[in-house]
Length: 320
Image (cartoon, rainbow, N blue to C red; front, top):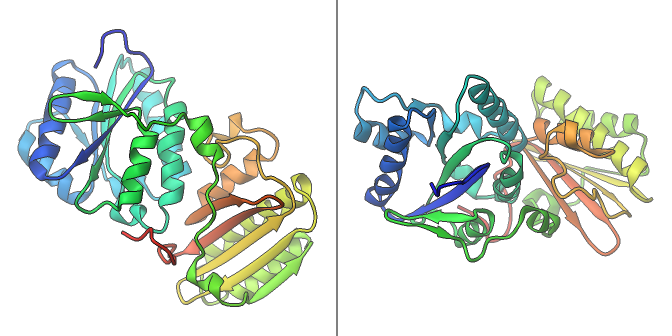
């Protein structure tokens, strides 16, 4: 780490072999151990075992399950911030961490994980943190790798730490809402379509559509997310508000479209609620409750799409 570095030092490892991954990770972790710094590994099971075997049994490095931690971006930010705050409160002057998204995150839900990778440059900058994010170039789609170098200020190799020439500052990256690639269910007529509904009417429609598809807890969470989305559309957007519902054997998809431009905060949905502007609390909560949330903007409308259940179904090129 360069002398005088403060705040968050965020690097990507784009590796093409186990040996290359270890060549970057082992010096990073052992350096943290030697310096007496909290050192954390949140890798997928295979790579965690690879690193654990290379370090040996007596290492003080902390291994934690990456899969559960990376269930949803907003929840991951919340959990990591709590962890880092606790370590600093316990006296940590520097923290090291290496993480890896589960393979499923690199497919249909990559758009919100790309937003996560960008947003954490701001969300973690108050902590003395040096972290690396591992991506295997043998299995990671090219479009994902292009976003990786746009969201990480630096790229780590076995012998160098290089600035990313393609890095985009979070405010700019997050403001560029991409067109939504439709879930295959959206290529069929919606089961229900409502115009300017009251939140209660939208909840009733969800109950009908989601019956037998979602479990009780998932349906309760989706009710809150739909309520918040419809309320935001009617309170902060422009009429008309159109709500569409689809159901498949393993998921429910809901879109809420209004005639406005959507939230002005580029971190909307990912930043902690305490920092969110008007309307941001509901959107942040929605990101905690759904299995995928995406937002898109056209010249005359804003759409938020909510998916509960298995979100890994999408037409288009972003498949792992």
